[in-house]
Amino acid sequence: MKTQTLSFSTANGETTAYCAMPANADAGTPSVILIQEWWGLNDHIKDIAGRYADEGFIAIAPDLYRGKVATNPDEASKMMNGLKIEDGVDIIRNAVTKAREEFGSSHFGISGYCMGGTYALRAACEVEGISAAAPFYGDIAPEEVLKDLDVPVVFVSGLRDAWINPEKVAELEAAAEKYELPVEVLKYDADHAFFNNTRPDVYNDAAAKDAWAKVIGFFRDNL
Image 1 (cartoon, rainbow, N blue to C red):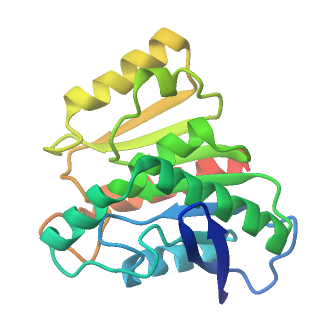
Image 2 (cartoon, one colour):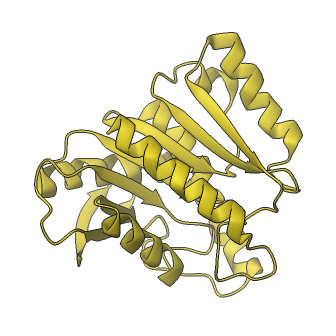
């Protein structure tokens, strides 16, 4: 595995993306955009990028907070609420453009966790070049945005999640049925952020491993 940092411009200023890739990566290597939790582009997200590289993908994790990382929930909440959805989507769009130039990738998957799941689903609806999306317990985009979704989505949810609760997930399922969207919802008996192995209070090993295997298979099938 090798890593590098990409620097690129956005409408609201410069930012970077952390990239992890197989040592033998080339223009034919599938690429996944990886979106941070509300904490920022921290070591946990970089570790997940490395896991993607170990599975044969180029992982590109853009820094939506432009260098800031939260150390507690209050900071994380302020940073997340201070990030306008248009700015986050613009960062993702420019990360795709930069990765296409740098690595020769033509089709991208996208995944993300918590806040990152929100942006992964939104970007699947709005960013050209995204060919498949696997959001983990992110907020549901408005119906007027969702109706334009035309790439396959696997949405990962936890039945014990108090934020992205079963009622919110049902909104996605209703929109998918109404507009015949290519959406599959995975439901685990687990809490919000159950994939985060740095948080023993919510981490669910069995659910995390099953979701990971399904998402990797999904991206291999669609990228």
